[in-house]
Structure formats: structure tokens, C-alpha cells
Amino acid sequence: MGGNFKQLIRSIDGKEDSFPNPIIQVNRQKRQLTQWLRKHNFINLDVIPYVVVSSPKTIIKASSNQCEIAKKVFHSELLYKKVEELDLKFKTDFYTHKEIRKLAKLLIKQHQLLDQNILDKYNIGNNELLTGVICINCHQFSMVRDKGNWICKNCLHVSKGAHISALVDYFLLIGNSINNKQVRDFLHIPSIYNASRLLRKLNLPSSGTKKDKTHYLDELSQQSSF
Image (cartoon, rainbow, N blue to C red):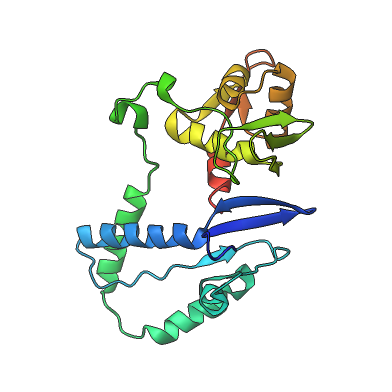
């Protein structure tokens, strides 16, 4: 994890890709959940943010604040220990069993995906969007597809998966389904075959025939959360 630039860096075969910092994400989720609890009059509950890495093969490194990061980021096999520590720390029951059941039912009832059209909400047309694949190194929409890689025309940065964040943006801004032409238009890929190959490698749920196939981005957006 890069300390100064607040980003998660993944290194595979000597190539680095940047992802949103999971600690920033989980702290934002803590703030949102705390606000939601207060809104529904559950004001004494502490929300403890953790980042749990499911794959035991993942090596977690921090360039700074290692002790603080180690308190929040750990492998799933240590989750039980963290739960035991919380159990020892919080010995007082803030709510009755009846109140806890009420909270559980409320969480289940309101656990729904946010369904709103962002472009309509802010009166933005599709033609006003900046499209293409952004370079995480120079932050320009200057990445082009070449022999299975994304190469930045501006700074020559190379990435394997730069298109994933672009497709997540498409999911958030436009919709959860996309076809070959929409991929080509949004990612600036001129070749039908290259777009098909890229979609096939993502292994997304799909429907329709080969000619008019539609791919669904919901799973991709969930995978990109870490």
C-alpha cells in the first residue's frame, strides 16, 4: 500500500496496477453506517472498520504507518482473533435482544442496491461524458489497447487491467449491461474482435446470441471494491 498517495498497488510479474485504497473505502463505509444508525436512533453503537483479505496468497505490505495499517488490514484467518478482541473490549450490552432483533430486521429491509440514474439526477447527457481508459500514472484518458495491454500514449505506462475501472464507471454512470459496440465506444477500441476478446476474458454473465450478446457488469463492480 502506497502511503503518500493513498493507493493500493498490485504487482504481478513486475507490472504494477493501482486500485482505490481499501482503508479509505472502509472508513467511508463506517461513516455512512454510523450516520444511518443515528438516523434510526441507534446512537451508542461503535462501528469498527476492518479490511479482510480473503486470499492467503496475497502479501500485504505497507510503505508507511505499518503498525496502524496492520490493525485494520489482515488475512481472513485472523478474523476470529479480531472478533475475540472486540468481545473482550465491549462487555456492556447497549441494547436488549428485542432492540437488536429490530435493528437486524431494519438492516435486512434496507439492504438494497442504490437504484438511481446519476446522469438524470444531475442533468448530464451521455455525450458530455469523458470516455476512454484513464491512465492511473498521469490521469489522462490516453490509454490504447495493444497486444493485450493498455499503453498510455502520454507517459507510456503499461497496464493489463486498466479497462476494469472504466467499465465500473460505465456501470455506475450508464447501466449494468453492455454490448460489444458500447464497449468499443466507451473504451475507444476500434476492433470488434478485440472488444469480444476483452469481454470474454472478464467472464461476465451474459445473455443473447453471439451477434447481439449483452454482458452484465454487476459482478465486476463488486470485485473491484478491493
